[in-house]
Length: 243
Image (cartoon, rainbow, N blue to C red; front, side, top):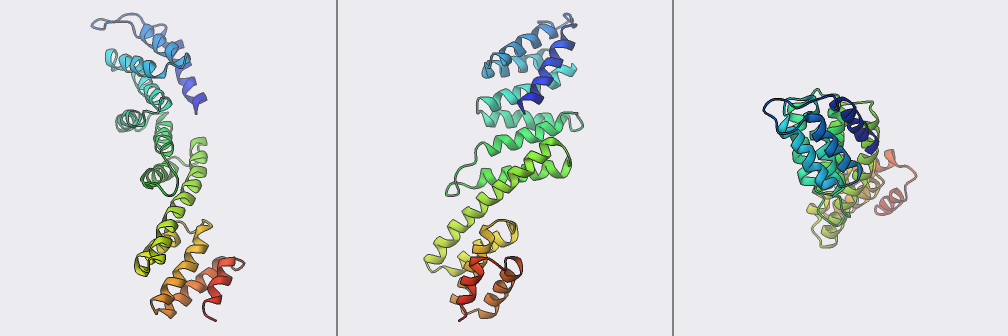
């Protein structure tokens, strides 16, 4: 990711160096961009973000104003100011939907959310939003290197989200609230069927249905588990419930 953004910076130095001062601007574009990039190179990301924003403020109609917006978003990301990064990326995507680097903007937005993902016991919202952001990237820009990495991360996020649903579902089941537990287990089965947690979710759903006196529904879930995971330990456990 850093390599891609560094390319933008190097190109900016080469092309903007030729720009002289223009009427109505405080400082030449090349001078401003070189200063911002030097701060970026020194890893003074917070100051660099402000400097790149100054490029855009003083030269809003230049091609490098657009590049600078993406650079400032990356700098905010590097100092973990994800809210500022996402605001900047949102504007970039809105006003430059066909830009050659817009795929990177989508990816970086997903990374801002991904960086805020916590353990399964914590608020699942960042994980859910990160997964949605990466899936949106995959739909709009299939086949890119960013898409490949994003899809890898969606699998990790699916496992985490499924784990969260299982944690809550088990709590409800242990509390005797079988309907609420079933809702959680069904979410895992419907939304995260390719995770290992789906096998346990099927078993837990069988338990809940049997506790509710719905044996026919329980057998349907057991049959689904047998079809999808015939060697699963959870299938053996589910089968034992009927003996």
